[in-house]
Image (cartoon, rainbow, N blue to C red; front, side):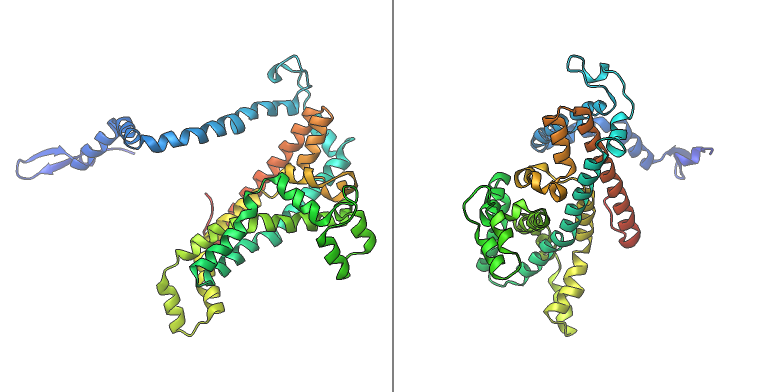
Amino acid sequence: MTTKAADFLVFDEAAGVYRENPEQIVRDDVEKHAWRHIALTILKDWRLYVMLVPMLLVFLFWRYLPMYELLGCFKVPDEVKPVADQYFSGFSYFKSLLFGADAADFWRALRNTFLLSFYGLCFGFPMPIILALFFNEIRSNLVRSTCQVLTYLPKFMSTVVMTSLVTMLVKQGSLTSGYGIVSQALEALGLISTEAAKAGLLNNPDYFRAIYQISGIWEGAGYDSIVYFAAIIAISPTSYEAAQIDGAGKMSQMRYVVLPGILSTVVIMLITRIGALLNIGYEKVLLLYNPNTYVTADVVSTFAQRKGIVGGQKGLASAAEMMNNVISMLLVISANTIARKASDTSLY
């Protein structure tokens, strides 16, 4: 590609000479003083950048620096030497997880992780959207605010408090002499047997997934509805008026006005949810499960916790978490690609 003088100069007919293009002068000035403009912007809004410092430190110390320890997936553990100086062991930990002595426990944990997340996606993801739609239909500001606060409150309880409440409601037989009100109600309705209620629902692997999902919806549905409710109130009132003129009722307005209006938000949240499909926090599972429910409750995080902290096999635990995160990354890429092709809405 060749350049000509006319690309950078303009002809001044009055003087009969070529002069530098004014637009090119502006572009050259911007390129020449780009860092000065950036520095002035930072100085102008320095308070906002100071507020970013804590977040950057959190990402540095809890996201980027721990990546150094991922080398432990390929090293023979040695408490004396740093990770970089330890003996390279290749993919022995990954082979042990996939085909070796730990394969059965790992595949069980991976299956449980996927199933718990998949059930949460199927039953837990629509609930905040439904709540936001209900909140939008409440005309009284006082009633709506009261309902929203009541649904937000469980999110602000610690995991320990929340799991303690769940345990009290079903009352494990090993911890208390009786069983909780939820177990009594289910027994009275004939949904569970007396033996299952007395033994404790949290001691029965058949009920763990249901308890986990219901408690998760109770804890997070109200708080997660904030995003969708904000998207709903951003819809122009003229869209509702046009729908009413066309004879649309409440349900039709939800279907043809509200849902299309928040579709982009739903797609973005769905992509992020799919990205976290295999990232189940171990705290809640660790507080609710026991050896009797390992068959349905043990997930990759608790498997890594037992192997790494309790069993001292740090390399094996790191390999398990790394495989889990790699699969999650592939799920994010796949979900983003499908969403971009299907609805022209994506994260990137």
